[in-house]
Length: 233
Ligand SMILES: [Mg+2]
Image (cartoon, rainbow, N blue to C red; front, side):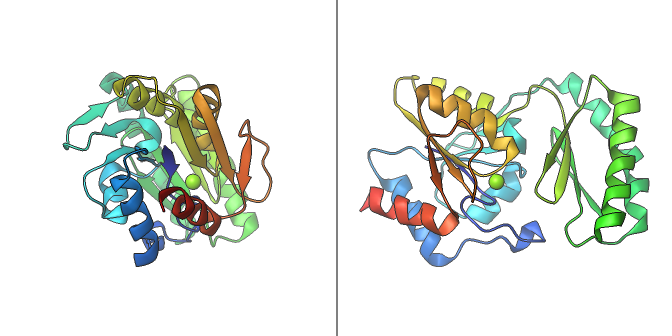
């Protein structure tokens, strides 16, 4: 069972550090981890360290950086991206810092296989100018080596080939590849995992309008917990 974090297990917050699990919700996830019939895999665009800090759960499968890093329950990490592809991100990071100097609500988050430009709280016109500048820098300098992925109040510049779907497939194969897959996600970076889950089971889109390949939809994180609670009780 693949579970996205932000927008799926917690409501989206303007500062990622504020998107914390309540005690009740963590108890549901603990029950899921302890359940014989489910193997939860937490899959996020956050770094592994950040994701594990937010979850504060017993040892479990976790995927960070949109699928670039897989952490086994025993603590062993697997990097799913070639190190040679990462140096261009460092160059882009340096170039994008200038874009953020005009508004203190614009900020860059550095991750293993991507750099995220956050603009929540920035006035619409200023945000549009900043985004256009950032896209132009990326297009003109890294046309083939870095992809642009617009998301909710954040735009990510990411190494091609790094997807949550690939990471979900990796964990599924490690588990023998026979058990049915279920995936819960709410955003563009989840589409690859939603498609994988639909080929090997079912996916649940979380949000008001489902335009994805997911067979099922739940309106918000609270409804995800209602379902998880029903499944584990
Ligand atoms: Mg999400």
